[in-house]
Length: 353
Image (tube, rainbow, N blue to C red; front, side, top):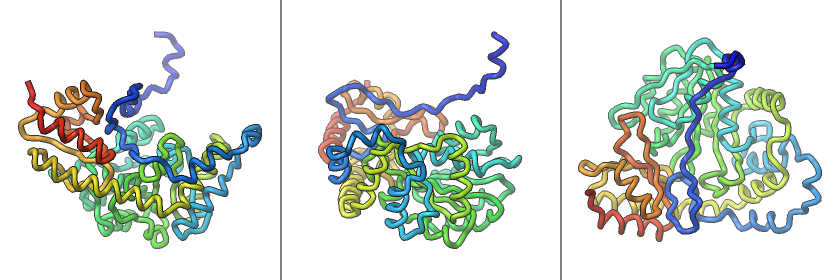
């Protein structure tokens, strides 16, 4: 081992979902939206003046920030925009989690949380979900340095009622609580109204899921102005120019087209509910997901084996080998009706060897 290796910050990295390089496949493994972005996004792409690319983008991202604020009835100083919600969440970790006390998050949840905690040297404690994969607010009442959790949770898709979200916030007035709402638009009630009532909560959302823009990387946090100011101070200490010019324009076009947003999310919700019924008819078990995916298991079928057999047919879903408690589950993204029909047809004829 070389001496300089002692000075390297070593972490176990986050493992993203597989991105197969195939033209024909059914891709249900990374919770992407099966429908294209709003029509105005394409219009921006085709009409964008490439001469603008020689100039730096607006470091304040004002056009998109103002559009998000307008969409949610906020002031612009209540919105922070970053390069996907992962970037926003990482900035939140660096900005608000600097206590000697451990931050708290569920033991079965978005697997980036412990990666950031390790990378930024933040002490943390994982709070077990109950036997039904539910977050229990009373388990987040102890001394801590901050709290973060997704709602709906991932990979389970379970939604925590708004009153329970508020209970977690209210019983922790001296630390920051981050509610990660990447999937809130698929049937949940947002915690956004709570940011006016509490000065210690941030609500983080993304364009990747409900706005069909995972490839553009846009995320945002909403909170009281003081918290947003702290986030911007950290952002400008790393990289002033986070979003490029065309992304700002495309994101603005997407957030302003609320009719298209509602149309596509409702289609996904309808397909999800139909798929639940068909899977249950085949003996699969799942909770009542309020996300754009299902978290399924079966009493007599190995999910790991099914995962591999689906892949052989170019149907990609997500399997988590750890923690052991979810090793016999699959997370299945909701695709188009045609894609889900093909999945169901495969499962109807599926027999494990």
